[in-house]
Amino acid sequence: PWFITVLSTKAGVPAYLYRRNCYEYPEYPEIYPPAHGLAIRLPEMLAPGRWQVDFYDTMTGEIVVSGSFRRLDKTAQIMPLPPFLIDVAFKLYRLPGEKK
Image (cartoon, rainbow, N blue to C red):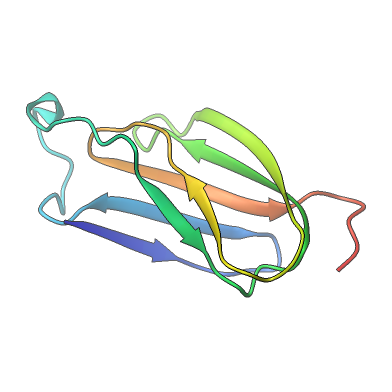
């Protein structure tokens, strides 16, 4: 029941994950059970190196969770998502100083 929209730019990889049945933000989001324990598979196209991920509150634009990780190679890697109600936006970007 989830959709994800992903872009790829030189500045990073922004993405947006949302409930399939919520095309508009509902008036009472608390009626939905919290989404927790979800993860996504990072695409193999992400180059090895150190990456930053910032998760955003889509109503305020504020960063709610931030972290970094190292990709050692281009094999599949799982990234856990923070708990959320309706949707979550995030951006992956390579940390400065990392070789391509």
